[in-house]
Length: 444
Image 1: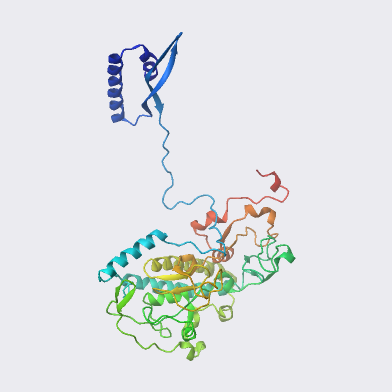
Image 2: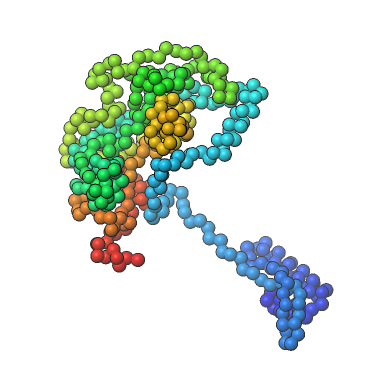
């Protein structure tokens, strides 16, 4: 109908053309009220040739709307294949987890309140008080952390793990792979091949340590006083500040909130003398040794063959509990990380120890560039290659694009008989069949 109108409108007078357009608009309004119309009316100035005469004017013509396809992704679904997070360059600062404009906006808001002498509104735990609903979560994370260390120490007696002596590459299989991606200082002599040695639990569960603070809002750690504080796993320190009571690592529990104007604390309840570090006590007679990975393989004996799948599943569940719990705690409790190195500090602000040796550390006199930490910096996943056949031939560089990756804990537990969580399957590429070396050139 609309195409017929566009052809015949050149022969109508203006009154007939306006009356016809009113009818078309009326019919379009009726159709649009019933169902969404895939066409819409558009006007354009054109020149149409009728026989030998050339007629110019404004003509209505129909245009089709682009189809709208609704998103079919359901909650809880994952893509078929998923790439890993990109490896950040070492000669550049890490990106801010929170957009920098939001950080500036919050700083300007605090500055305006400070100029008027108004106290900064603080909610737990920003005001030094505990969050009651997160105390059970902290205890659950700490118990899962102990179970994770125990399970990994037992599985390492059964599942072989290799680590490169020249870089940080880790491989979980009966032999090392032949992928030429070593970035060590002596890798050029081996043409990028790794130098494999027997791995340990620290290759699977990367030890990220932090200073233990009796009062996170107290005196900041200086470079000269850094040896007066204990270094413990960052996950354990986060649980302590979230409400877990450990006799060897006491923490100050406030009953009155702190008060701040801008960046200045005007009332912290006074300074309290901090207890001496627990290093004065024999560590072998303390239960704190279960929280550290040091010497874990010697503390736990090898498991029986029938218990290996059960231990693997318990270790996998403990890994998921720790990751989920740390994510919940970090949404409330402040954790800082250096933007250049792997240093992590649990507290409202970082320490002043001059220990950073990464990119342009001379410009900062060795001080860290503190910013908000992410979960992967406190509890790093440490991705390794997923091996479909641990006892098969080693991996090769020619077939690198067909291999997937998984966190080292997940890969170790999977080879021991545990079920893989759904969210790790896309990055492991379980649905891809690795071709032979002769067939790889024939694959598109």
